[in-house]
Amino acid sequence: MLYFSGNLHLQEEINYLHTTYVNCGAICGNWWKGKLQEFEPAYFNFHLFRDGSLKYEVVNY
Image (cartoon, rainbow, N blue to C red):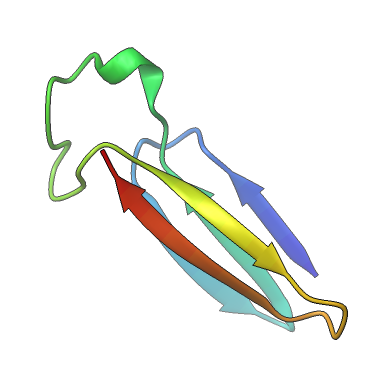
């Protein structure tokens, strides 16, 4: 199972009880003008596979 969100402005992945939680950060119009803590402004590309696995890449901009 996969849950993803983008509300914390940070990036994280947590795997717990066969569920993957991915927080993708938030673009927010780039209001912080650069890094927020150690995270560059970015978006995620998700690749979901029929076997239930996933892969994603973080694209900094």
